[in-house]
Every structure is written in structure tokens, then in C-alpha cells.
Image (cartoon, rainbow, N blue to C red; front, top):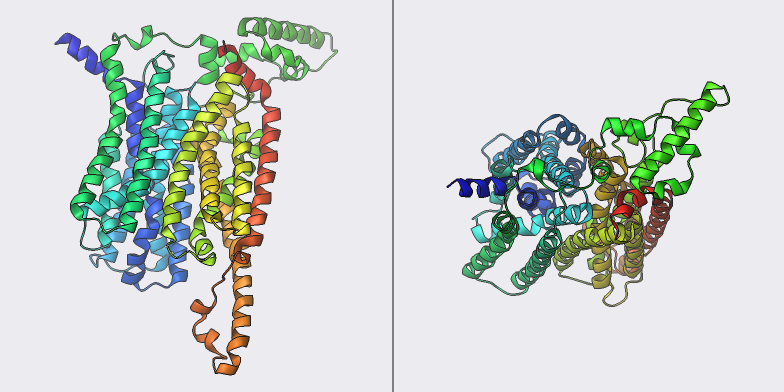
Length: 593
């Protein structure tokens, strides 16, 4: 009985259990991805026009990206408290919308509906923050795979929730709003006490490689399965019984990763967390939260950072500390003689723990932000306009491309985390180089969209989906390495603002303006042709139908501009690579064989 209790305790305190629970939370943390499925019933129930519905969409995007409060609360509350706040927001926001749509509550003005959508979707930021903060702290030397997998499941959540809704087969579409209000809140409340940093969480075990391989295999199988199911249900009339079977298999795949913590808890001898084999102390401090005393002894004078040779950073930790101590002693003597003026170190250095305000005055942080804004913003422009892009090229079945880009987005997040981890662990090279590669891949994808060649939609969707998804695996991991984990929640949620900022400018201004201009040109030519047929004023009465653009010209200029932005983003990423070589050499150089 005592041994069973020890096994259960080891299971509860296993960092892999936290990781799996975070994957489950992320599986229902992408409510914003299915806004397109609930918007028709909102539009019809409340008699909104397309412009009013677009305002709700903007509120949804803002709620998904404005995570200042989530980042701040994750630093001040236990993570279960932040998750509870997010679940409450999700329930209140979308629950109230459901009551209004079904006539159970009085109709509110449009601005109030925008607030409800914002509040409901803002709950996602708490789920994302808590999952990433806990797992990055639990796996400080595997940040790429962990972030990639978690963000990948968030991207897949729309397809997962849609499949569950299809199985339940509610009689009306408004029930989908009820499901996304109640479902994620129930899952989060059930798992919120599991999501936490656990004792002895920085241990490196031989089983880690096999465990990640198993999780990756499940991810690839899940992506392939969802792709097949979505295409089958779209192209063929499927019975409800078969839909139920598909959903049960989906649940089985989602539950499968629990095998990892169960197997590890049963196969390993339980140990007290304090007795577990941890990383060397110097690596703990670099990967996790540096101890203040060590920071103070490492660099006291800011002039040491300026005067020390570059090769000092490449020395072993003990030798490095000796050299720095020697430099400090020399500077101290020079200061005593009045030869130099020494000042105390101002703020942390790369690789240490930054607050958000300290990070905001660093060039590296803004290089990440603007590289993300240009790269992910151009990708989100494609995602937002994918329906019109496919229609302009003559495709009728546009939602196939929407489903495909969701899968490629998922694989991009998982693959971006995996390959960026190989770069830093096997070569001790800066992680942002993988972001530069992803942005160049996106640049090529935009060119395919611009040219409109046969099959270009398929190739462009593949390249843009992979590149866009990779951003959200690479950027959080790189930010945690350069600016520490202590205030990671606030740092991450500030960086996510690059996404709506890029979309607002690129999609809301550039893409829409160019599309409308080309549509008006085509409509004008059409009016000239119809002038002699008595339809001179048809454009005034059927403007929504007439003002449609056809052909690759509709998005040619937009796509070429987006391609140029991706190239600029890659240049910014490479500048960041050049600036952070020594940081990554310190973090990962000593772990190489």
C-alpha cells in the first residue's frame, strides 16, 4: 500500500503529467479559430450586416492577443488562479452571447457585444500563458519542442471542437456558442491544479528523448487523422454513427500521451524531488531563474561587459568566473587610482531575468517584436483573406484551404520547435536563425500566391501555414532564453501584440485597399460593357455582387509586398542571431559532447 502511494505521488509530481495536462488545455484554448462557425448565427439572430460582424471579429482578435492582464496575474497569482480567471472570462463572455442569441437575455448594443466577445476570447490568453509558463519552467532545456507542441495543440483546437460539435449534433447552430462557453471552462477547472512548476523539475533524464519522440509521433498521427476526417466529412455524406466513431478515435489520440507519465512513474524508483539528479548548478541558473547572489558575483561593474574579450564567454563556467573576477579586481584598482570611473551594473544582461520594462529598452527585444510583426502579420493576412484569395483564383470549395492551413499551421508549430531545438542543442547556434528560415519559406509562399499558377493555392497554403506556425514555437522559446523565465508571462503576452498589429495594417489597410481598387476597376469595365444593355446603374443596387475581383491580379501586389516584408523580417532575425551568438554559446555550448 505504501509503495502504491509512492507511485501515485511520483505520478502527480511528474513534470510530464503537467505537460500532458497543458496539451489538453491547449486543445480547447483556440476558441477564436472557430469564430467563423458561430458568426453566421450571430449575424442572423441579431440582424447584423457584414460591417457590424467585422467589428465583432476585430474584438475577437484583440481579445485573443491582448494578454497584459494574463501576464501580470500569472506573475502574482498561482497558475491555477490565473486559469480560473480565464475560465470565468470564457464562461461569462460566450455564455452571455449565447443567452442573447437564443433570446434568453435582452439584446445589447453592438459595442456591448464587442466587449462580451473580447472578454470571452481573452480567456484564451490565461490558458496559453499558464500552460507555457509552467512547461517552459519544467523543461528549461527543451523549450523548443515544448512550446511548439503546446502552440500546435492550440492551433488544432478549432478542428477538435468542431469535430466534437459535429458528434453531439445539436439541433441549432447557437448550441456551438454554448459548447465553447462551457466546454473549455470545464476542462480548465478540472486540470488547473495540475498546471504548475513541480519539484526537481530541471532534471535531465535519459528517457526524455524517447518521451518526446512518442509525443511527436502522436502529434503527427493526430494531424494526419484530422486532415483525413475533415476532407472525408466535407466531400462525402457521412452518417452520424460514423462521425461518432471518428470522434471517439480523436479522444483516444488526445488521451494517448498520458502513457508517458504513467510509464515513467511505474518504471523509475520514486525519489524525493530534492534528491533527484539535477542539471549542473551553472546550467540551472542559465536555464531557469538565476540566483541573485551569483548574478552579483558574476558581473558587478557594467564596464566588465565592455572590457572582457569575447572568448571569455566561451570558457567553462569556473574558468569564466575566475577571468571575470580578475577583470573586476583590475577595474576596482583602476577606479581607486582615479584612472576609470566605475558604475554599478544597470539591469540584467542577456540570458538573465528581465522585467517587461527592462526588456522594452533592449534592442534585442524590439528585433524580435518587429521580426514577428512582419513575419506573422503577413501570414495572418493570408489566413484572414484565404477565402477571397481562393475565390479570385476560381476555387469554389474555399473551406478546404482553411482546413489545410490549420493543419500546416499545427505542423509548423511542432516542426519549428523541433528543428530550432536541434540548432541550439546540437550546434549551440542562436534559435532565431530558424525563424529567419521560416520567414524566407513564407516569402516564397507569398510569391506563389502572387503568381496564381495552377496548384499555387495548395503550395502557397503549405508554405505559409508552416512558416506562420513556426513563429509561435520559436519566438516564445527564444524570448525565454534571452530575457529569462521570471516574467515570461508578461514578456510573451507583449510579443503577441505583434500579431494583431500586423494584421491590422497588412490586412485591414494594404490587402483590403488593393483588393477594392482592383475590384472597382473590374466593376467599371463591367459597367461599360453593360451600359448599352440597360444596366448602367446595376452597380449601385448590386454592389456587393459586382465588387468582386477575379484573377491573380487581385492579390498580386499584396502578396509581393508581403513577400518583401518576410525578407525584411528574415534580415532582422539574422541581426538578432549575430547579436546573441555568445548567449547561446553560454547556454548550450557546455552541454554539447
